[in-house]
Image (cartoon, rainbow, N blue to C red; front, side, top):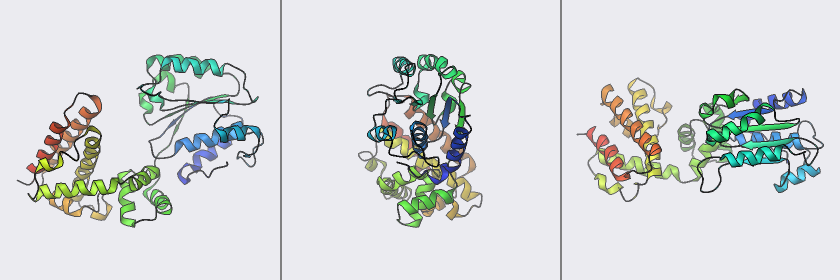
Length: 329
């Protein structure tokens, strides 16, 4: 148990340790970060350090009673709150139970820590129930909220917490990490990093999950449509569910962006989909107005997919493919 902090989180870790050593660690923090950066590891390491009885050089010792309890996942002073099965939000009853638990004396005579994630899934009642505890949590109590949508939290919650904004690292840092942990093809690794918007753990998931092959199949299908070798209906049975359509929207939005950049003179090697040069070159003829309408249509499709449960994926897929085919008439 001490763990190595991911390279892009090192500066945040050092600042947290500094605050702790100077006894100015806030009692409530929001870690605002997109998925794929391993923020939970940072929070876990901080929790281990605060709960450890005999830390060594700003790291948990791994041997004391608290560390053993943490290893077993049964430390009585570390509490985690997330969305329960078959629920869509963190409920007010969950928050009230947490508050009641935090009001008790610490079992190990040290910190009491509560981690809430994803915090933006607290509903209005849940967030309101938490306000008093955020303002007056009691001694040696730390509340940590993790979210990728900090703006979705009520202002009353945000104002009571220190917000730690964590951004994706540079492409170079992300690529180094991915190649070290998944030594594959450099070109494939680079595309995955760009698809993940420099989020290293997300890029690793893309590489390991088979997403790259599915993406290649989808783009090959688009190439076939543009060459009039395939019909739209040949895609329906493979790619017509809601989750896949969301992915396709993102892939096509990436093509829109690459098309714009390529027309502006940016080198193909710098584009997100640099391995799809035939597709991008085939789109070089479309006008600014066509590109704008394509982008607008994809965003609307994505909005519908995210906001409605009563949708017909086939109709949405029809629209996406017909818009694509129209570029090559």
